[in-house]
Length: 285
Ligand SMILES: [Mn+2]
Image 1: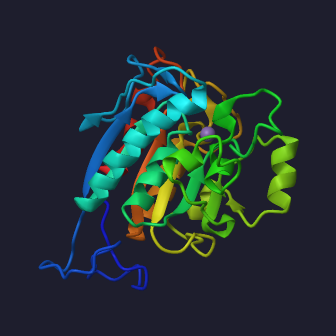
Image 2: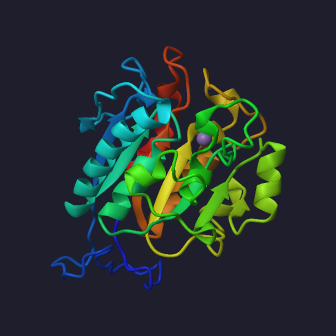
Image 3: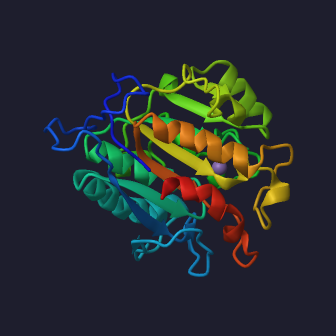
């Protein structure tokens, strides 16, 4: 269950207050906001109508991306997504955006901002997603979204989405274990914090590293050990199991500060991967 509560409140308090951008009083002491599941069945600018999605979607977002370079085409898609996300927030929902990549997060965060929420980012990923066009050796655009969220290269897509840079100290990178050397050196000089998934375990959660205020929680499923999920595009061994990730997700949801969730299903279609994470996603229901 995703519930709203004031960031100032003790997390163990049972009387929850309304949240983000809305100070009107509620009749019930405990208020749960409705999850709004949005599917964006794409990998970058490739439409993946057969992408197996682990949750039923209330809405599927597609768009005519037109011609142009991939960033221009993705800007069309994410602009539409941002509009829908902002609408869901205004309707007091919690958008859960399911996509085939991590770049979709740019649209989700832009949507939160359009609705008046400057969310901090908790980014679960085996990778850093911290490249820029200048540092990437593969040229893979999906290796850049977290760096773009903190304000790098706005001319690529951020400016056209109206995205405001998320301050580095409002970002927690969780579970990253497959970082390229330029990402390691960037992190060494950046205010982005990092931790293991287990640090957010329910029993003894270390919440000190969390950004303040409303949170965008991004879960690239490849943070889970690749032995547990078939067909990943960039499998990374040595990660936590599903149960550890589920516990961390629960910890975050219990703060009452989760404004939106991004679920990056970074697997190839046709491997039946979605079935392997359904149990994990029960925490979102
Ligand atoms: Mn990723």
